[in-house]
Length: 145
Image (cartoon, rainbow, N blue to C red; front, side, top):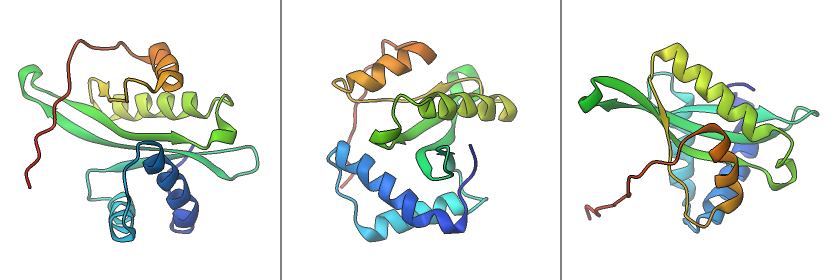
């Protein structure tokens, strides 16, 4: 488990593209490069965790960021993206990422970690149920363009 390094771009990009493909979200090269610049910038709110396999190859990623919780007068952590290479699923990589993210949130004083996933993402949801409680909230999106 570690933060990304400059030499990780190609592998991170490969995993991030697979993640985008899973959700059928097109990724322009410029957008992907922008996200990489965010996670490389210690002043940017987006953080990144990488998990390696036994051979030192990056096997998965997690992107996260803080968010204000006015009603609770606290700060939480939003897990934007979580992806593990299909060959590494079932190896504990997701457990390592979620555990490290919990530790990161605790260290920063963030009271909760929150994320969303697709309703039909059954395998991931089975894992998430081991770590978190599914909420009653329904998600909406309002386009601004």
